[in-house]
Length: 514
Image (cartoon, rainbow, N blue to C red; front, side, top):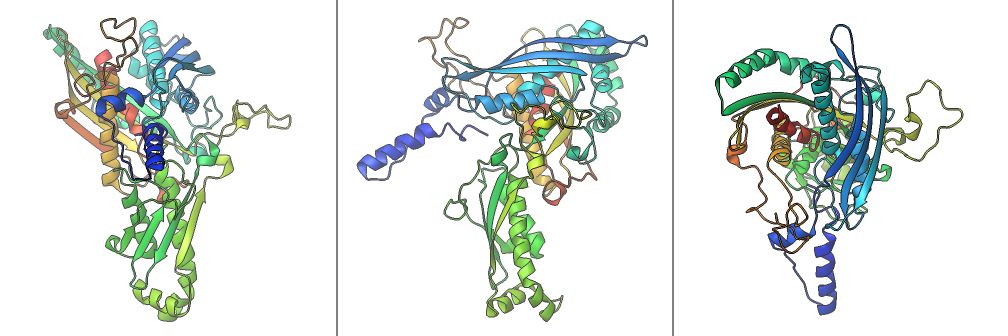
C-alpha cells in the first residue's frame, strides 16, 4: 500500500552489501516490531485554518473562503513528504467550491523515522481537513451538515483552486457527485433515518446512534509528470496463445487479471489463452512504481497499444483467410510469411493532462478569463468520484462502537472487472475506517512519558496497533458501481479504483463524531 515504494531500501541495501562482501545469496527478513519501527508510515497532518460562510435570508449557507496552512510530519528525512503534501493541497478543497481559497503546505522535519507513501498519499488527509472545516461551519451557522455539503458542492463549470474545470473534458463531461449524493440520500431515505435516530437517542441514555454522508473526488495521475508512462511486451504464439510482460507489479490488486482481459478482448480469444510473466526489468526497462491508482490506466493502455500493433500486421493474413479464421490459424499463416508476432507497447499521458508546475508564473499572453493557476498545468487526468452513507452505534460509557450499515456508491467508469473493483472499494473502505477510528501511532514523547526510552515506537505490533477485524466490518455493507458512465481518458472507458474509496471509510468516523 505504499510502504515498499521507497522504504524498502533499508532491507535491500543491507542484503545487497552482505551479498557483495560474502559472495553468497543473502536473505533479510525483518521482524514485525523492527519493520514497523524503522519504515515509517502515513504522514500525520496538522492544519490551521480560517473559514468563512455567508448566511442568506432564506437560511441557506454559502461557503465564502478558506485559508488553510498544512503541516505534515515528514520524519528525519524528506523521502516523499513533498509529493504527499502536493496531493494533500490538491484535495483540501474536497468536493466543495470556495470562491476565495488559499492553501499553504509545509513538510516538517522531526526526529521520527521518515514517513512515506500510503494508500491515498496525502489525499485522505486533505479531504479530512476539508470535512472538519465544513462540520465547524455547520455548527457555527446552526445548519445541518448535510445541507451545507449539498448546497456547496462544485457545480459544472466552476474551477478548482488548481485550475481544473469541473464538468469540463477533464471530468469526462460529467460531474457525478451531486447526483450520486441525491441517489444515496433518496434510496436510503436519509431524512427518515435521521428521525429514527433522534427518537432512538432520546429513549436510550447510554447508547447513541449517528449517521453521516460523505462524498469524495480523487484525482488520478502521478503529480510528477515523468511518472505517467508505462510499457508492455506482448508475444503472440502460433498456437493462438498470448504472453504479456508489463511494467506493473501484481500485489493482489488484480492488475494482471485486468491486463489479461484487455489483451483477450483485443485478440478475441478466451482469457485462458492469455498468460502473463512476472514483472522484470530485462523485459520492460525503467519501470515506474505501481502506485497512484494509475497502473491499469498505464499498463492496460500499453498492452492495448502492443496488441493493436500486432493486429495491424495481421490484417492482410486475416483478409486472406477470411473473417471466420481462428487466431491460431492466422498466427500460423503469419509466421510462415515471416510477420513479426511480438510488439512493445508504450503509453504516456498527454502533456496537457498531467503535471503541475507550482513555480510557473502567469504568461503575459495567457487568456485573462482562464481560472486561477490554470497556466501551471493540470495535476490530474480525471477524477474518480463516490459517496458513502454510514450509521453507527456507540456506547457512551466505553466508547466502543458498532457500524450498523454502510452504503457506498462509486463511479469507476465502465469497469474492466466489476468484481475486482468492488473488492477494491470494500478493502479501501475498511482500511479508511480503521485509519480514522481505531488505529493510532504512539511514540514515547511528552504525551506518553510512561514509554521508555524517549522516541521509541510503542505501537510496533498487532498487540498495540489495532487494525479492523472481522467484527468491525459494517453489519450491512453494500457497494455499488455507478452505471452507464464513460471515461474517454483511460483504457476501455474505465476509471482507477485503488485509492479513491479510502476516504469513504471515514464516514464511520464522521457518524461517530455526529
